[in-house]
Image 1 (cartoon, rainbow, N blue to C red):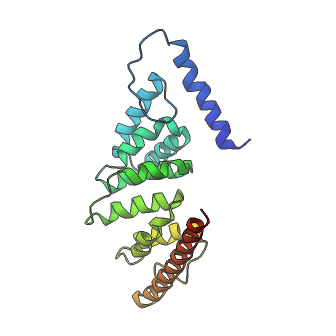
Image 2 (cartoon, helix red, strand yellow):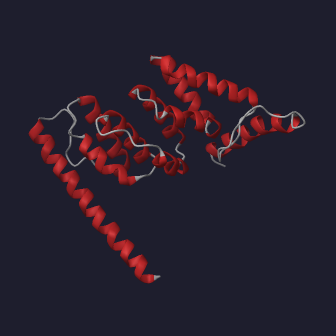
Image 3 (cartoon, helix red, strand yellow):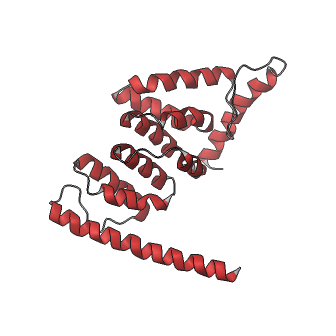
Length: 210
């Protein structure tokens, strides 16, 4: 049995049993999501930590992100709300917690969130990185464009996210000269074009077989 399944089963026991014991008392918790429902006590703790997260820094922020990711489903609604925060570090922390769960079922929900405005390239890249790491390969072009970003840190994050999924770098190094980076980015564009053509052919073949 996987660790993830063990954690989920343990959470069910911890979260749902208190609800069953107190079922004779009307609950004040309003929760309509498709995921595990927290008990009132856990819901209050989630809300408190969600309010704290924007004002944490360093190790405290890292520990809070880890807490949310290990908690999993009961924390999803709060994290999804934080994903829409206009502050890149706050939305990035929420996205990082969701990514750390490895739960690809989050992809449609994240896709449905309003996409950041074009002038918020930092927020757009954070969202794209999260979706790609959860399995949405359609985000690759956004991150390939992110390889051109003026900030070394942003270029490095985009390159690492692409590498984690493709296991290739195509010679791209975030700290290389602009000319060297352009050559490597060209290879990334060629890879995406080739992959898109293969995907399109497979889709046509599947459609013809129906």
